[in-house]
Amino acid sequence: MAKNDPQQKQQRTFFVKELIAFAVLFILLGFTVYGIFQHSVMQNVDIGLENQRSQILTNQSQPSIRIDPNKGTAKITPSVGGPFRSSTIIFDKDGTIINKPMLGDHFYSLIKSIKLDKTQTDKIYDMTISSKNFTSHFRTLLVKVPESNENALYAGNYAMIVENIDADLLALKSFQKAIFITIIIFWILAISIAYYLSKSSMKPILKSWRRQRDFSANAAHELRTPLTIIRNQLEFLLTKPNDKVVDQAEKISTSLNSVNQLQTLTDRLLTLSRSDADVVQVNLQSQKLDTFFTEVIRPYKDVAASQNKNLTVNIDTPGSGAFDGGLIRQLLVILIDNGIKYTPTEGEIGIDIQRIKDNLKIKVSDNGPGIPDTDKKRIFERFYRTDKSRNSKTGGNGLGLAIASFIVDQHHGKISVRDNQPTGAIFEVSIPLKSHVKVI
Ligand code: ADP
Image 1 (cartoon, helix red, strand yellow):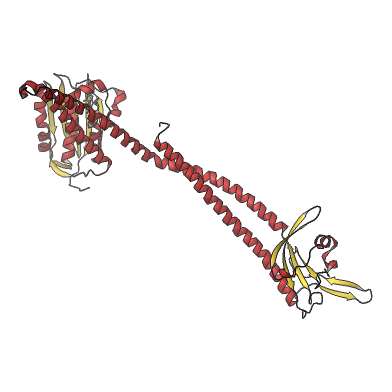
Image 2 (tube, rainbow, N blue to C red; image 1 turned 180 degrees about the vertical axis):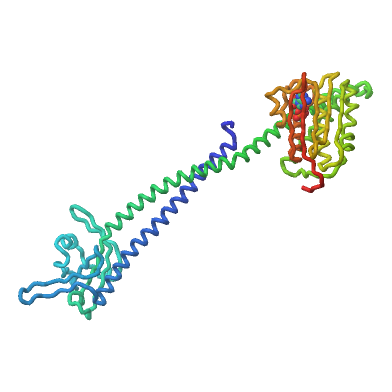
């Protein structure tokens, strides 16, 4: 493919767009999954905080303080059933922490600087506490406990329920990392799959686009030669306004030949472009085989004779069969035309048509130059000609066999070419005959 092929450029643009689209999609996916996960983790923490609050307010399983009157010491019974990582800091109205013994020295040293902010009452918020060695994150809920609370430790005070969320944040961080890696892996995977799929689905499109491009270029090229000839001849005739037709018969006949060539070319181009557009309807009709083939071949005896070439015909086709008469006629015309065209004067062209069971076998042979092995496969391609210089003399355009192959395909048959002995080519066609008329 050429470097500046617009299709390749388009493919590159398409690929870049795919990269971006997948990136956006996966980033969105990542954010959504992470958001949901984070929300559910925090929601669990918050549910824990709310439970604690209701336990405090309903005085369930809460720590209590009991003053030993003999020793003057306070004995605190810790709460039962509270979350493992949560603690409750109790402030009196002035903001002094009153449950220091309950908190433990280490925790107390960490939280002692917390100030009571009464405006945060009943709000869940995050709090970061930093010490020399480490930083801890908490989620907290400040509860104003009514005076009526049965627990003397709480009554009329503020209970700050704090839950350490370091482990949750760590889990979230690991999850973030896992998501990031997963996204990258799946992004690369998705891109590779999309690239492979787009490449394989683009293949037939590219193929038909290139075929169409070559077709138009070749068609224009083929049209140019006869048109140039006609223009030259007409320009020449204009320089001889007083000549009679008979004086310029050669020029006129050359122009006429070119017009005929143009006619054949445009007919063939039309057939092929209709075949591409899938608008060729195969019109199967029951034909009396002998009559049909005799009629198609009859004019060619004269054509061959006029060129001093020998045409031998053998038709052995009993009964009738269904096929598209117009298309099969066109197929025979192409093969016989070629046979006559490429056979030198005094050459032999043979047509052999037989019905073998439900198969129609058509054989057109000649003793012309034949077709080199390397070209045998390619002669059925559009515009392919074995020898350009020889073909320019015969006026061929390389479309006949492409049409022949299309017609045979339409009839689910086969076409092939092999060498004739000692020289020449034999074209063989095999078409299954439908015994009844079927409309496609
Ligand atoms: P064209 O109009 O050029 O004959 P075709 O598609 O019918 O186009 O044939 C393709 C090419 O195959 C021809 O240009 C010619 O080179 C070769 N070819 C076809 N038929 C014969 C034949 N009977 N003998 C030798 N060469 C042939």
